[in-house]
Amino acid sequence: MKFITSIILLFITGLTFAQSKPYKATAAQTAALKKQAEACADAMMKQNFKQLAVYTYPPLIKAMGGADKMATKLTATAAQMQSQGIAFKSITIGDVKDIVKSKNDLYSIVQDILQISMNGTLITSSSYLLAYSSNNGLRWYFVDTVPLKNQNIKKLFPTYPDGLVIPDMHKPIAN
Image (cartoon, rainbow, N blue to C red; front, top):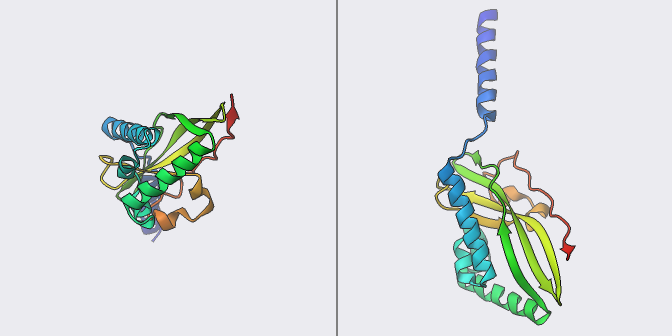
């Protein structure tokens, strides 16, 4: 009986270690993530909101009434910001650190550094994008993490990995 108990314990221990083994992303997955995050940032900088929708997590687009309505809302928001003296100057995407696998989906947190001009003052802000892929890293979608901090992320991303922590946004710095 002790022998069987020992075998079962070894099996359970083996499963535990197998489940906690980190995912090793390929260079192609990492490169695709970085390239697509930069394309997303470029679309934002150019205020090409239809192109931005290509990189936005599809359930969010659906919640906004579709890509056209999303683009219309973002165009109106950009015009309002411009009328208040706010303009995007640059968006820089940080390095891809870790890609985490959860079931069949991949997730990553990618830093973005935003510089805006507000009535002549340059402000630098650092926050994070949640990157999501359902096809093994060929195609990535992005969501700003600031609104995700205050809601149950599993409602939006059912396979979101428990161990993936969204960092806090850094305080903006006026230059």
